[in-house]
Amino acid sequence: VGISLIWLALSHTYTVLVDGESIKVRTTALKVSGVLRAAGFDVSNQDRIAPDKEAWVRNQSVISLEKAREITITTPEEEHSLFTAENIPANLLDEFGITLFPQDQVLVNGQVIDPLMPLNESVSLIQYKPASAINLIIGERESTLYTHQPTLGEALEDADIQLAPQDRISHDLMTPIDGSIEITIHRAQPVKISGMATSFSGLTAAATVGDALEDLGVPL
Image (cartoon, rainbow, N blue to C red):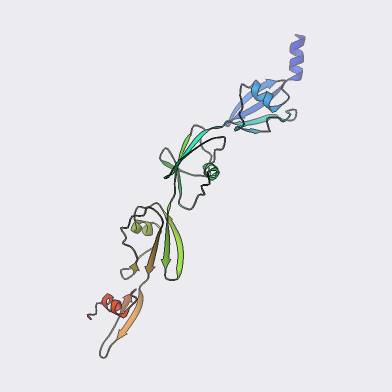
């Protein structure tokens, strides 16, 4: 009985949060590592522990443990594996030097997820699908459009970039988008061509008089 009373006097109850799950443990351990052992957990260097496992626990009532697990990341070119407690997809990608750009996708089980939201602890495989970059030149303005659409026409429609019938574009709208590509769009402008007895006006994006006359339906 005396030993039991001494143990009760020296022991303390701690809350251990393991991957978000709360566990109560009563122990005489003086360090975080001892509390975790008393709770039945073997920790690795890759586990995320707060406070540090070598910290004294006399003023601590809650200990957090995020267990490391193997995460595999697949990209169109390669596959990466990492044993880690990190569970934010964007941070995992960053560890392999992969920077997320607008419209890049991160998928789990075929479903697009928010790369800034924590992964479920059961997830072990994530897929990275980079968007294709379209370098878009319209007049004197140059911009980059990121897309997952399969063709140029669908990419422009998805970005709400409208084309008038008289506009001229450097590539066919059915051009497949499977990597970086540069596209030039010449917007049609109002023109007026005057002759000896007649004049013609309309919209054209042509760069030469001959092409402009052809756009306006004027026979040469």
